[in-house]
Length: 403
Image (spheres, helix red, strand yellow):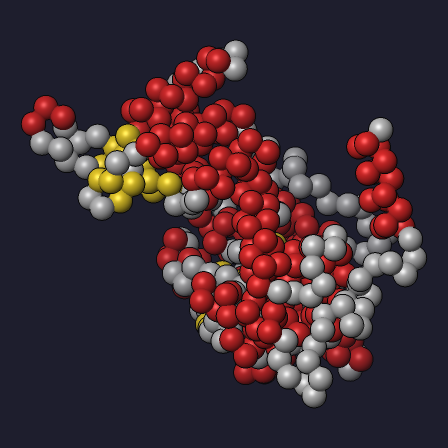
């Protein structure tokens, strides 16, 4: 009954009108586009200049910058406005934003584009079962209906690294169609087929990281939109809120990352709603940071296959006991594989081959979980491979146990 009564209290608190601390909680979500963008006037103007010329000629732009520097939000701010303004002047413009993280393959991307371009009464385009030429022919046919089609591929490095760069060639070779790419990897296009790279003729637009004042202004703007008046206790006379400034400073010290700052503000708001404190204080921020870190691990690890979790758990357990090698903490690969097999056997699961496990290690390295290093130890010891975890081992273990 205790758990059930507690659930009832949680539901009643959420459903009782007037009790929430929010007036627009959506403003604390990363996907939300604010009515005004802060600290990006130069980039907005430059992007607007490039996009405005796409109605007369094909033009391809590569937007580059670190994670959380405003690349995506600026594109989502500019493209719909250009489409709407062009329509007011009698021009048929269609802008399409695609996150390659969610739509990674060539056929997925092309089907998504075509379904955004088709007329309402035309049948839906499948993302499987068509030859590549069928997608290309249909895209050319649909694009002819418009004065300009502008397609943004966010995290464009994902399909390129997987060898699906044909979608880029298809887009740039389609009449009336321009491409906007977004990536935090400045040399992503070097992995393209040279013929595709030469056709792109990319113009680059670089975004710098936010400074502390810009991060603070972003947080203040979102806080005033998201929370009811008086929840965040801003000092009278327009002074800075100490808690928001601390969040801005923390995230600037990491990488000038607005995403991390917004996520930390969101987590702080949830603690406020739970009654943990009466304002955003250093104590509340520290608790919010820990919850964000653990939640991030849980989210990443939750998507792993069962045997990937076993292998990662083995690496974590060995990392707790590892001795420094060349000044860093490394786990012997052979011991990690051995411990994985022991864990799988205890769980009553079939033990995977070393070859399959090495594929998992390749994926861990791609995710940024680990790095591998071969160390020459001389004599008969040869050149064994070691694994270095690139995460907080304790937090990873907690996340694995929660998942």
